[in-house]
Length: 498
Ligand SMILES: [Zn+2]
Image 1 (cartoon, rainbow, N blue to C red):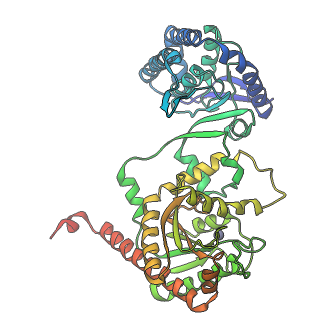
Image 2 (image 1 turned 135 degrees about the vertical axis):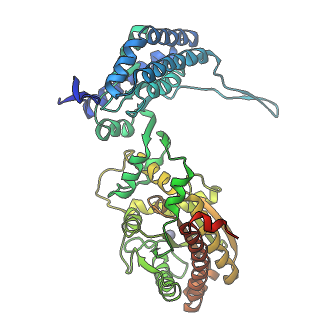
Image 3 (image 1 turned 90 degrees about the vertical axis):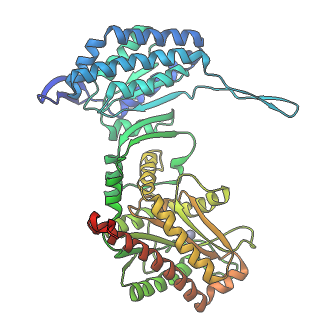
């Protein structure tokens, strides 16, 4: 086992050498938490509360030691650390008091009552960052333990010392061995193992936008359908910039110059299939080419295609391409399918982890199914990618307002000129939109499974109409975009002058 040197960031001098945990140690910690779970959940709530109260008292008694440790390891002023340790004690006191007051509900229903029963999940993985190690550890430990879960706590490897000390104090307070397990090791190994471990029922994770950005910009990893299965679940508290200035600055970066158009599917992935054999992949490639030509000619915008031939492109590569090209917009073009052949019309989507309704969720599931066609021999699909999937989703949610505006404009244009059923603008969790670092939408131009629509969608003339409708929407969106860009470029005194 390799060792980890923990530094004092103020002096850069080593504080302590620790054994560095890896996959094996993470597995062992999870196993310990798992075997202690039945015993811990069986502890009477009042007794669990008593033990947490004792832990709170121990934190108070050791306040100065914990504060010094935090200051030496994190490099923050001692006054801050003392305040934070005081808060940690308060947190444990609070949850100690909550243990026997946290009930389900009885709900009157016709003919009797229903009730809800709150139960612990089992082993909970807690991943804590370097900036407030002991405080954030307590926010996660308190509720998890109060509810009868056992935990594996992974502090940042830069700042593990107070988390380790909390683990010792938990034992001293009388919490049974194996209820609180602290593993110190790199996030990409130990954190990832916790996230993918089949015996970990829930992850509590606090991380930075930095990580999100890296994942988004870099050669970001794959996203697989199995990753959002339930359980496990993941809670992300991501610190995000709140100053409006920073956000507007990002949105206003000059006139709209470049769009990436994405023809869905391709190669061995034919997409939806019509009753007389029309394949979504061929239809949308043709329409996408028509849109590209029109947009370049009429709007003077550069257009790049994620594919211009009949070959397979992974979902990740589609948005990575748009990110690399620094595209202003990402527009994915698809055609719909439904087992009821009568289903018809146009719908336009922007990304959101919340689906508008179950029909929207089904469309997303259908399109997301593509990931199963990616690299059949690759890494086994795992929960490793949950974090990535959610970070990608967060990345795109930065642009959610703009994406919904773009969706509205394009969708209006399509339904007005195509004389076709308007299924509306919707939101759902499309993986293909998730990695895009720009406003992004997905258009379902019609149902190839509807015989009437399939017939129309085969016509060159109708495909041109669709392309022109999309062009008109993009043109209108560009006008608004460019106007805002001009307004932002003007000095404030001029925009106020009348
Ligand atoms: Zn599709």
